[in-house]
Length: 612
Image (cartoon, rainbow, N blue to C red; front, side):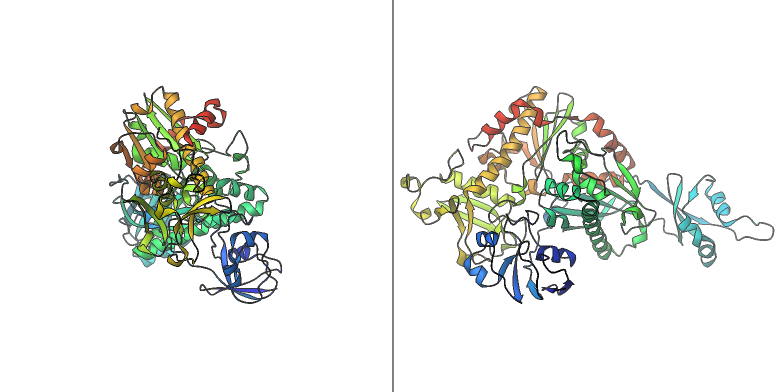
């Protein structure tokens, strides 16, 4: 069996001959960027053969790698098959997870109403005159004789009592004793709230006694190795029970990694975490719980469940108190998940009297409209362009990603995350780039680049060398090879523009359908809330320029941060909010856009860059 050593991580793994490097990295517990689930179509999984025999590139590698890269030993991990021992270098990408974990724009105050109650008990010692059993003695002091107790706790209870002078703290939820602890730990009640995103998983450690967020952490969703979008992951899961287990293991491992990070930051003991809440799209909910998502993909898009699911943490393998509970908030429909429930909670959409729309922009665009006493929601298949996927030089928001682009004084000006050398374009940079080129007159309302051969007068002199023919139409050079971190030109291609047109057209059309159903126009909207880490970084001016949003005064467009994560935190901290979340699916009217004959017409019109 050939052995591969991955550097700089120094991870080794032996694999069967013929195994590709993408799978080998997965086996080693390493993540390699890739959007196409190993089909060789995205070209993102570039790694370098540092030591070992280099094979002849295949067609996919010839398409996505330059001659210079091939000569230097670069290959596509999903295409390169292992036959002999190799040393492989994986480029390190510093993700900008602060975008996901920042509390800016979110809820500033959580209501403390924990489901877990802790009681400190000091009991008298047994005597010949009082031979009451230890458990009954405890229940008598609690004045709750009908409480049940976890066997795990009961097994150590006699020794624990006697080694602590019969003074213990009891953690109770509902009618169950879930933990018996030495001393007085009544001030130690903690929980973790997760936002299980398709691209990023974020977690928050909360002091449930004080309703305070103590720490936040995030990690790239390792399921990305099986595709950037939910359909790819559903397809993978549907192929076998082992594949479904594989996807669940990935997300649970990531959640445990976040928990470990949170505990390291705060020095909180693992056994003092008693509850977890989680939100995510419906597919992520199914995969987190290990439930077959197969029938979410084809019409009529039926989930296995929509209600809130509550299970013991030990059943999922989450590293908190073994008797702790995990609650995944309810879904609304096949493609409107509990992350949308979180957005509704955090923005009080279910309590508003004004006309307000909330848009959570991501791989799926979830939209909610509160109008005329109704609460409606829909989902649009925006595709992963907003996450940088399926874009020639697209990438997640990470160090070196182009995030801001302006057209000023006749020049295109760029800003990169961390002020690092440019290595690609993230979602906000993609929108900015296209808006800047529209303003510069280089992209027409149809979405086509100006043809410099037919209309040379439309291309300013300073851009004549930057607007050029690519392999599939014209492209614009944002960063020249000598200035980029990758050593190659970073360009915006005609295909990239088309991907964005499809994504933004779907979002806009979805909103128009909701407005039409409510009997109001875009001018009747009092507010549009942009939710999600991406929504927090999209500039209103650029969104309006490309027609992602209807033409409203900018002050009516408000970024509300990671509202889905805020909703998960609120539901963790407060029983009342959790009950409110469980009731929401019955209050929300779901619109299935695939059955709307008018959607396609609006969608086609919305693809143009004419302001509407």
